Picture 1 (cartoon, rainbow, N blue to C red):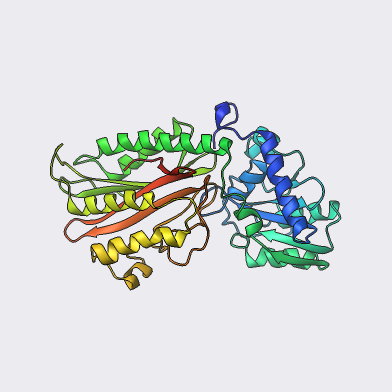
Picture 2 (cartoon, rainbow, N blue to C red):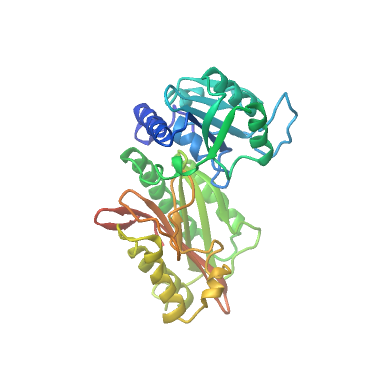
Length: 390
């Protein structure tokens, strides 16, 4: 993540917005009869769920979460937590000393910070200071914390009745503020420009790895960070093959998640490849279904018709087995985390203006192999707005 001195002012969240987020969380905690909540976060990638710490305190740990504990000296490295009382000021518990990350970033969002290389011990200390060692506490981050570390919290605080409630934070994060949209739109413009350049460079003889490096540099030059680009092996492209790139990265913690494709060596004006044409057509038509007021399931009905009834390409069982997307779903929510609302059968969450959604699918050509396509969509009161290119 870039230093605060190099981040343009329009890509920062105002301090008052962080305070308002924590205030809303405190109010929701009180409404559920809880005395406070512990929010658990992990290192800084989508898979590792850094978003909670960024959302509440502008912080994510740069240290990896794979180091075995050496308690009591260090434990849960690669994690952080925000302790939010139902009444009173919040405390950020970090695993890394300020030497390892820009303290100014955190100072833009929160005042009270505890550094402890034993994060569990740091959280217990924060709760003790706030007189929250008895009563009912919420816990957000149930898919992030290990069973071992959650048990350590319970053992250290036998007077606490824990209530796991990730929705205390997940649902408020779904509707983005204007400050968040400035960051998201910047990231989408950046990835559009960078992937234009990468697609132009995807010619016979160039390796997938070379293209990945080009993307990483281009995004870094635009105040963004590449998390992954696949494929990224040493295979060199050949004329006539499908080249697709699946790109995930972020700007100030807010993700873009796209996939674009081409036929290597295809001449301008050449007849479109049927596989890519069908896939790209689906992506844009499915994006049009993201109308506010619909559920994720109602939007997904189009995708089922398109692939099962219209094209007769797959069966419902094959979709559920991951033939079109490993989830399986035609799309998912985006922002500081990945998740709901999913665009799939059974999703009851209603799409609303301010939500940020990715639409994606894989589709195999019987001769040329797999292709992938994905766009990112802003849901507005007037309907869906596609922010990224195919």
